[in-house]
Image (cartoon, rainbow, N blue to C red; front, side, top):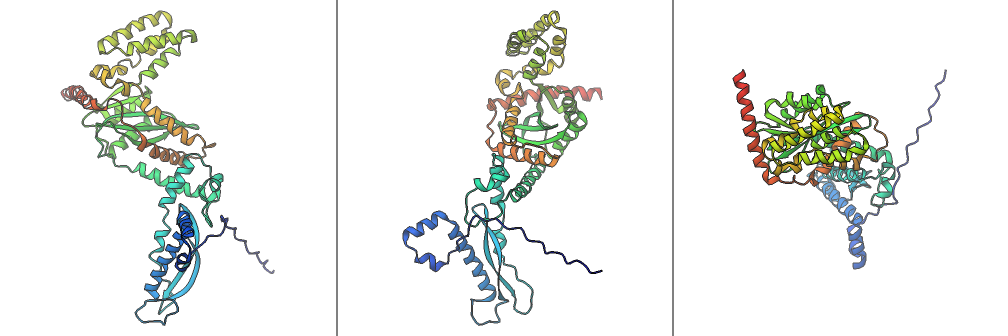
Length: 427
């Protein structure tokens, strides 16, 4: 039986933005001043000219001048050129690449200059920013700067490039060394991506800077997932020996994870906003605004004794109005007053009484990731989140009241030294 000859597969056409203009030095010198100025403004013809000049200079070093008699001191000989490309202005531009072979054999001599022109560092950064800020892969060609002759702007190519670049961002965030950060506080909160939750950790240094420590993907904020995550931060260098204030929204799984991972090296400040909202949701809609104001006023009392007394009075009132709301208020009440107990509420309450510091970061993440219509798998979610967080981080301002953070550290030392002494005596 005769075999059926297969029809050769047609290669996919490469889409280009018109022909690329490559100048020779003699052509450039022949231009008048106005034409030279236009070339300088365009940059691409000049860039290609200099790329070819550098490649030709290396070929001359390896094989001598073009059309010159072969000499023994040159290790190679010219062997035509191949179609190739270099990267200019953040895009891939086609160019004929000269070839050199060994003078005494058929082995190719690679050009040392060429890999430098093919590096994607700048391209990755530009592409990441454009896709992250809302340009879809299918519209990337229209939105990108039109470089004559540019290739590699199809939606699939841009998507692959973004995947590779964002994977590097994810790896960078996961491998961060935290040992150099002098942390005094850590915020922990979750951000929803489709049906999954990303719990993000943000550290506050003694000088008030905010640093993204990492994140973990989980279905719910449960202790089994969050404890290894926090322990992993410690393994990467997070140091709680001077005491840490951990601000959380009050989830039981997250609270248990903090206890198991940090032990007696941390105290917890539960978010007062979450506590207030948890209480008022038990009440009728018509009463919620009034009770929200009363709870807010109680938490704003300057001292621990005053705030605690005001909250207990509200608890007695709630018992006669709605016992479920009263129970919600007493659950974890003391941890909502940690800043009061440490004596720094008046100085740092604005920044640390709620998880708003992390909520604002989550809102910025939402601006960058909301355009994704469908989250298909875990790697996609983690790559996008890591890329967004690393883009946001340099724009984060220091926390309000950062000049008082040394007082917070002193208060933590006093409080935790008592706790450590008791633990040793019990042991």
